[in-house]
Image (cartoon, rainbow, N blue to C red; front, side, top):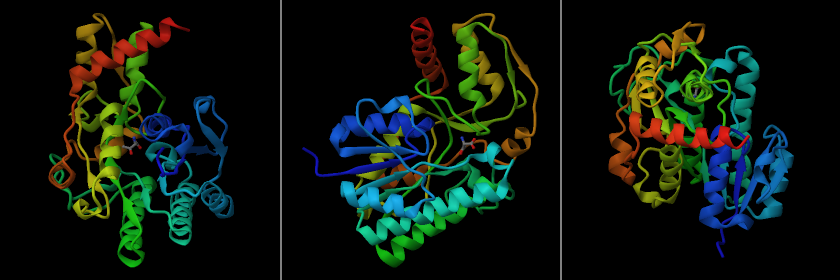
Length: 317
Ligand code: AKB
């Protein structure tokens, strides 16, 4: 039996729910403590507790009670939703992280995963193959909180030796769970509409290229990063991570190969401006070099897998 005890914060979210299942597979159900601010139906097969990450005492008590050795902190307000209430977003994203870092330091947690995002980038970057060390001038409060979070993670590593690791996730696309409040969410919604046989009104314009990654690759990247020997982790802010890049018209064309007649309309809204501030593609050579990152899915293989699983899902309801 594994001696690791793994705490997931934000375990009902888009990535958290899939990551919880993957960690249960890797370490065993008894080794994973899934938590979220709300109850969810996703964790019947394992330990689940309600936790508001802003409640440092409750977080400390869970870590102590379960003798937690690793924390995956996934609770955050994302780019689009964050703009509706910037101060609340800053509060949740930053104070949530501070609580995790402090509790981890005080209670001797061995490893922490803190996700960052392509939202750390903004103006004055090369938009294609945006390098690891590009200037970070985000335009959203979410992006600002991720830049600050990256620096705080590095600070806790350098000052206290806390082994904090991080990835700059692109838009994550999966059939298992729904995204919420992001600018890249269209790339999940579009598949649901295609499978339901409905036209899709896309909130970004047809030529908006963004970096994206299939859920399987995103989860594998997370686990590979966390499993890598500490000495190979040379970036202690956050690693650029790439899967693929495409525009709404390219994903629509990929779906149309499988679902002929699928119709997409373009009705850009406030999220267009956020997308226009982000990279079109990402240079992830540091991740490839340091811990061997290699994505498996491209747009068409992702489309086939998404449609297969969503067809199965909708057929069973
Ligand atoms: C968002 O769109 O806000 C997120 C992200 C890229 O971090 N999916």
